[in-house]
Structure formats: structure tokens, C-alpha cells
Image (cartoon, rainbow, N blue to C red; front, side, top):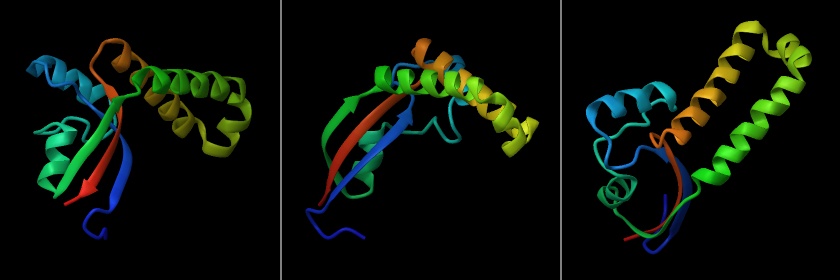
Amino acid sequence: MLQPRGRLVGYIIHTPDHLNAEDQERAAELGPSFVTASASPTELAQSAGFLVVHEEDVSTDFRSTAEALLHTRTELEEVLREEEGDDAYEEEQQKKRDMIEGIDAGLLVRSIIVAVKR
């Protein structure tokens, strides 16, 4: 619970505003659960009583991180398969590949948002 004027900072993966229905569907397949929303992150924050004071697209950095994680997980495949199990390992690898594909296709955006409670 934030007091009035309290700050909230967070990262969010979302879709850009310009997507048509087909692209929204593809973004939903490539992104995390609930990546498609009825409103933009700024609109959602405002409806929850926040004023967004800063929003920045950090998709390029996020893509680099996802690619590095995918690469490292591949290097550690044997150990991770033993720890996670084959299904969980494959699922996690596919999630990373999907996220990268979604960012490259312009279907997914990662933003940092700073908001103040009204």
C-alpha cells in the first residue's frame, strides 16, 4: 500500500498500441501470460490511481538479456536438464526464443514505468 505521492517503479512486458487483431494474437502466443491488455500500461496505471511520470522502452536491453540467458542455459543444458527435468528445460528455452522472436517482430515491448500514487 502506497501513501499519496508514493512512488512505484516496475518493468512490464506489453504490446505496442498499433497491433491489429492478428498481431495481438501472435503477441499473446509469444509473450508471457496476460501480455495483451485492454489498455496501455499508462492507462492501466492511471485507472489504478497513479500518475505515470516516466516510461521508457528498454526492449533492446531486455532482448540482449534474454539472448544471453538463452545462450547460458544452452551451455549449462546438461546440469539444467538434471535439475529442472527435460520438459521444464525445454519449456523455459522455448519461452526465451519466443520472447526474442516477439521483440524482433515488434509485437512485444518491455518498458520501465515510474508512477506516483495520486
